[in-house]
Image 1 (cartoon, rainbow, N blue to C red):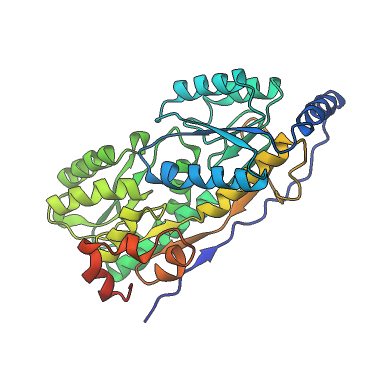
Image 2: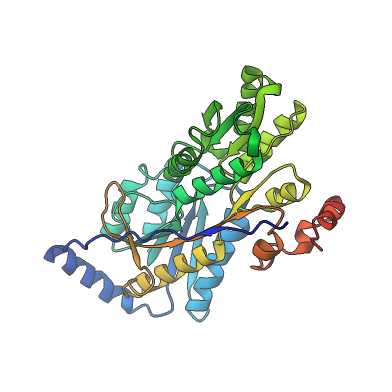
Length: 365
């Protein structure tokens, strides 16, 4: 029987609005008035955190660039830089964007705390900042992402489903993301809420820089410590790490369900073959469109209230206008109804020669 995909919408975060001081309002008014004169000829700075995860270069960047062009009648310019997982480099990139006088910044922070002073510099220069995918610290003007605890819960529940009656028959390994990424802590928290007490966690790692090779090394260490016969499943916080984990499992002759996130092409293909059990599909086109809409409005001196219906708090900033996008558990049973239907990947993308027979076996053609 086909398992139905489950989509979980983020809960509304309703909090009362804090009154702004007159000095802040005056500064905002002055900045908005200046930005409004730009019209469609705006300059949007886009700073993405790394290029190890396939999504950033293949999805987020082109999607944001396309939407900015659409919203500005082709007159808006996107100035792009990638930090390659270097927080110091990203801070330098913010300085460069300020020097180049961009009208707004979209920032996916390498390190949410380390970016704080740079966000303040941008604000002081009259450049509003949209936090993208990760909730950066500092005086940001808008934020869009997914409900990260729900992502972790979705992964944890999928792993329990895959394990079934074997959930406590052995040990699972938890491969969390980087400690510098606030999202990783939220994924982990959500996963623990579902898994704690229902599985035996043998080993747990925070994976430096989210790198697949680090996840691979951690998994090899876990296999050595726990014994290959005792590992029944792996919680992996994303698809890139899942690839490194699965390489280690295969080398040790272990077949066990592995979770993921991002619906990367390689991850989807591993789901097709059964090497990876699931991923979390996060509708990046919606997230990218929202970020572009916020950025264009802010650059043109418009409020983002009509776009952002939620509010979130960071450790430094309260009541940040936000859009939280729902997520879906992706398994082999709903690939056609999710990533293919939404145009993230085509059947031709997924079902290359190496995967044709596996695709046919699950009716993906």
